Image 1 (cartoon, one colour):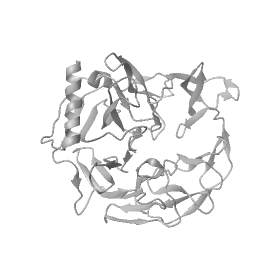
Image 2: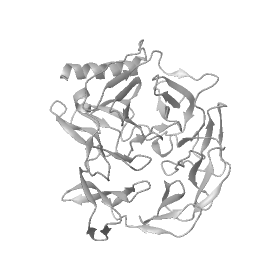
Image 3: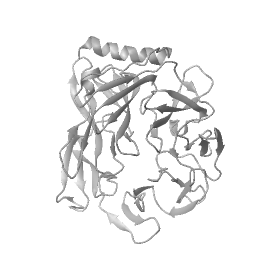
Image 4: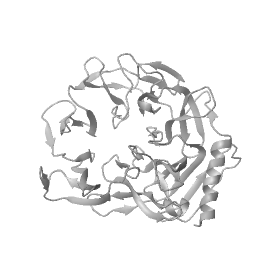
Length: 393
């Protein structure tokens, strides 16, 4: 794809962002490395929610600086949760979308609750983070960066060798390792059962350099795939190698390139400095922001950010140009999936209005962006929702 064609694509997305005047549903198939690319640009800009909004559920978000809030999509009501504080990525949604972890403000211990604030129960007294490693087993990270597995119901701990490891495969024994490589850092997968404290004795798969703004990574919900961002082809016009999504199944050990954004746009950035790739709960789709690069500095030489969704089974890529942002550095808004994998939610700002950050939802089939609520408080310098889950059942 030539420079003129790249400019046309980004210019079209800019027009959709600035004027919100797209008057067609544009579906264009473009040749890519993996599959087809479809641009979905419905007319009308951001829509108000109606009397109902499917698929319903509960979104946890902060509308002030003191508490977590419930936004009940079905009833269109919101209210603060007592005895909670706003939290970021350390509040984890359970695999069944019924529970969320939170830090008790009185004890600083980790507890869990239903998304409406009921059913509260203590979990771990001393931790920096906890995750569901399996539906009935917790992965607990200590403030000293140790980690152990423990049944959620309580029981014996199994400590893991996580020296240098930043995340662990759900339900598995592989970890993503960051290590110093001369004057730079690199990444690798390491089997936690086949290493010792002083090095790797087996089960080691190098992934390549760890480059700031090109290093997002996330495991699929079932743990079969690690999707990660690496620099791809060099773009001489932008004077930088843009980001691409790669993947690896540890059982196979061979990295695979899943996107070819360079052929569409030239160099582009995927997400930000410390953000994840967002897997759908069904493990099929990955949502992420693609950010225009206008020069060699991925922090300063940037343009618009646009939501993309990759189908990991077909390689097809969907581009949602009904809403774009320029507030994306160091990180763009966090993208959260609905429990049924049909919608995304995030916090977005419209310059010049008096609503603050909007709680937006995207229907991934129609491409329609809907304003569910407004006035999100940007705790931790972000206006990110915490979780989209289900009411108690």
